[in-house]
Amino acid sequence: MSEDKPEIKPEFNKPEIKSEFDNSEIKPQRKPIIKSKFKKDRQPVQLRFRFKFFFIIFILAPVIYFGSGPAIESAAKFIIGKIFVDSTVSIGSLSIKPTHQISFHDITIKRGQIYDMVIKEANLDFTWPALFKKITPELSLKNVLLTANSPKVRLADLANSIKIMTNKKVAGKVTSGQAKAKTPGQVKAKTQEKTNAPVPLISKLDIPDLNFDLNIQGLKANGLVSFSLNLLTKEISFLNLNAKQLSVGMVSLEDVDLNALQGQRKGNLKIRQVNLGKLVIKNAKSMAVLEGLILSLDDISGVFLSKKVIGEMTMNLWPILECTLNAKFGGISALALAEELGWEDTIKLSGKLYGKVIFRSEGKALAMLNVKFISSSAGATLAISDAQTLRKISKESKLALADVSESFLDYRYEKGQLIASLLDDTLGLEIILDGQQGRRNLRFNLKDVNILGAN
Image (cartoon, one colour):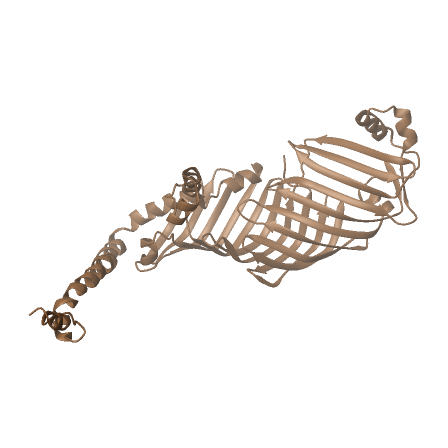
């Protein structure tokens, strides 16, 4: 009997041979595991989503369309008031397409004496699936007129009056991989950083035609601008600007024509005349391209004192305007430069100058201006005879007036550098000259100046 048992056991443990027995015993145990998980995780989510979607579309939409116009108008005024801070808003009429759009017509937005804005049409575009995912709607403004005419209004006041980002806190998420790789303190700091990140009130802003006429403290501008700003991807899709006049502080641009596209080097910039205080650059032009929120101007060229100036410039357009300019010039007459600046009665210059300019601004204020120059092989001369200028140099350098007068009687230099910076409304100027007669350092501090809109 013991010999028969080995023969029976192999036949009993052959699930592969008895496929019918297999299906009845094993597969019923596996099917509930697979199907129950699918039903629990997938189907109820889809059913809940479909239920919400169709419930809103077929039941709530008619109610909104026929009976909630005033409620939507009140909500719209509230949202517009969040974007245009402390403003008064009026809406002429509205129309509703419950599935994807709410349109407002004849909107006026006003904030005291700071600005007036008239919008012919504003469209709030959305999709219900996107709203369920907490993606904010897109906003397009058509036929917009923005005016501001008050010498007391500053550029900062105007900029701070329009806010399309909010500091509303959002829950930060830290993945398990981050938690393993970082200490608890690092993870907490990362979570806090995400929590305090600003959130856009809208996902995209399109303005195809914004006419502006601004005459405020430190800024004069009039023209037409159009752009498309994506706040989720942080990109400006396109930017077009036509301005008859655009002046900020001592910088004034006349007849500006700019068009630029995101990531495409097909745009260009043309400016008939650039006024830098008393200095004039004519027929400035360059290539233009948008890279994220940065406008890059390549191959800049212009004419300054009958000589060509070349360079490149980058501008961070949003949320704070910052720009950096690198330019080169060559063969400029020192005498013509002095006359252009109105220095002919104060100092006398001779020779030809070659050099480069580095300009940087942050927000509306000058951060740094550095001009390095060298003279031609023949050298250049500087003579100062103006008594008031000599006394100022004597006071700043703490040298005797007689010594200062003699040192600038007929000073020959080969190279020099001008450094300008703005700090606390004080413009600091330093001019360094090197020559065979030694080095000359000129330092000036000018208070209450208006450089690039700084007050």
